[in-house]
Image (cartoon, rainbow, N blue to C red):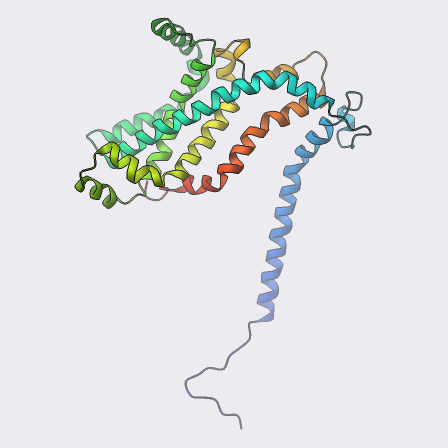
Length: 297
């Protein structure tokens, strides 16, 4: 006879079918992810191989073929044509995204932690700005830039400063929303404690709020930098040939009489590198900052 210790149930090994089912599910997920990656990388493959082909081989019928003769001529020509636009895009996107982040941080901080009568109404009005289409404000925006530039004695219309101003103003609603939702997650007790210690609004912002605002700044900078770098409509309407950013220059390459596919592909890759670098550097904060306050806000 086999005796069992009282009060203890005999141990049973995990069921083999359950383990097999779990492994099968894992393999299915991995295969699906691999398929998605391959589908995503197909355009990248075509871009890369075409950019290294001479013009004689850069043809849609040979898009999938590797180059018979590898050359970087298309890259040199594309860089020569895009360089002024890339410089203008950096002059637009870097200060524009930083100014947007600063203004969004101030607005979100006040609307979330320093409540005042009508704060919810003002926040709702901010959000309305997100739904105004660019196309509906182009003509009055051009006239506003001309009149404002004349009043200030500076050239806003036709240059980078006016384009920065347009993007900053248009970006205030989304930047305010992101920062406000993020700051909602900061405990009110910290703000109250700073007030008890005699800190004012700006001191509290500098000492308590900004040190923990990295994820929100990352989200806003990625969002605004990408929006400004990829902008085409504002750039066409509000700038001249000497101030055209990368997107307009890229369109001019694509709109040539002859179609230099290799140059187009090389230019497209060059134009996308800065946004990819920004996302790689700040991407680990992106989802954290974007989802902060999703439940409380």
